[in-house]
Every structure is written in structure tokens, then in C-alpha cells.
Image 1 (spheres, helix red, strand yellow):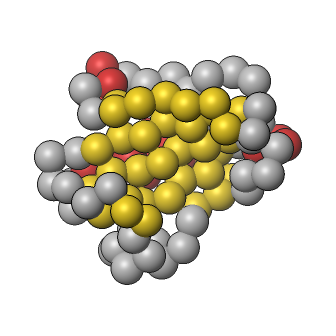
Image 2 (tube, one colour):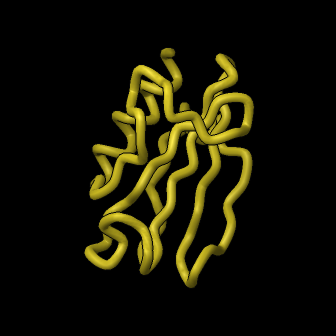
Image 3 (tube, rainbow, N blue to C red):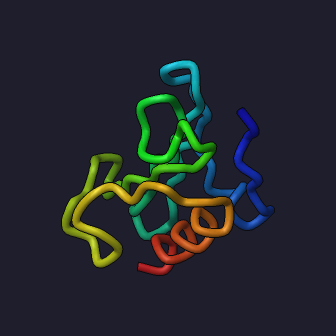
Length: 91
């Protein structure tokens, strides 16, 4: 699987990268205490198609009440991930 292409501005907020279910997870944390878990593996929404899934984090916990989404966002391409991460960073 190809890795996520992360621009320099988002790279500053990347906390860690992990291997999950033979796939990959990126965890971001922004200055506003929001963050994101970005994953792609065989069980993630869109992972089998090479697409990404994002969960919004608040204070390092899953957040289902953010203005971005009340659930997980799946089936995202590279641009969708980048756009969503920038939205989360501006909350």
C-alpha cells in the first residue's frame, strides 16, 4: 500500500505512524487539541480500494461530536484526507 503524502504544514502535527492490520495509521495532533487518526487497512472504510478513513480526536480520544463529523469519515482519497485534516486543524 502506498503511504499518505503529507505536506510540510501537516507533517509538523504528525505524532506517530503505526502498523495496523497489515496497513498503516497516522495520528495527528493540532494546536487546538483536536487531532485525527488516518488509517488504511483491509478493514477500514475504503481500505481495500486504496482509500483512507479518518476519525476525529479531541484531547487524544475519539470525538463523535465535532463540527466535522459525528462518525468516522471513510472512502477518502489523498486530497480528501488533506482537506479534512486542514478542517480539523481550524476548529
